[in-house]
Image (cartoon, rainbow, N blue to C red; front, side, top):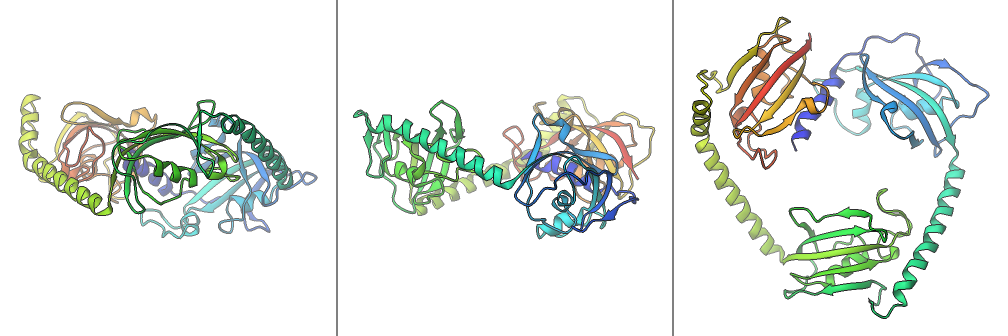
Length: 435
């Protein structure tokens, strides 16, 4: 959760930086605005459906935001229909094998292509630049042939593996050919269509590799009757009552068949299902439970809000802090004076941060990511406490701040260490700013 709020601001901050005007670019017949550094006209071009391996470096205002050189494997993908005129697919369709070229386009196009409005803090026309080299082209027909061979091989392997179980009398086989390895049906009731089930489960290969793992701290909740995970999973759920536990082998035709599952499970892959049913509830029972949970959380949050002034006061006393709060309630303590510029509205601010709770537990630090967090000051991309704190600082300076929940994450629960309405202690370093 915390990464969603903090790292997202970094990405948006990078997008905001305005690129300079780029010279030497011409529009190709496919609509891409490009500048070629090397052209190999005698080499082949990729077509839609082909697989390409490329070197790619993406920049915004000379800041690298992605480089395929950082990847352990070649950067490969299938060439698809362009999402908008002038995107990377248009560029690839304009290039030959071993060509090296630069592509630019406005960031606006990325948002519009997915049906989103350009955020107000991104200047219209902000450019991104991609340096591309096509290293390899694999034709669509070759890929399809290889996939067909692989599928036939996987299909034959599955038949051979399952035959051992179907011919072994120690396993029970359902009418749909679901294999029951072991089962403790439990002592509660069985699920009916529309019931809410709380379960733990894992999908594993026969070699013991985990494909999906939902044996987390909280059980997975699902509606009985939903067959999104396949007929075999649905049938397995029907065989285990509340409190029961079982292990099954699900053939691919009762699961994800010839398609597989989102790159995680290959086509024609049977797998082992370990299932534990924690609870089975009617929809009315579930709604009543959720209402009770929400009421309990509301009571806990109300108590946190009521006690927060006392909690902050005790923290100040225990740590010998005598600083008065600002009018908003923020406690600001400069630890190092900066000698750079002060922050002004619209500046792109770079900060390092370390966030603690009042028990002095480190919850998150930008130093772990190895780069400062960037955001546009005054555009509400950052929690109010940090926005206010940087206004008191100069570039190069550092400070420790105590942030009441109203200036922090408020009602948002970041983690077990930072529940809703938590006071934050943050060490800030104002690394720099672009005015």
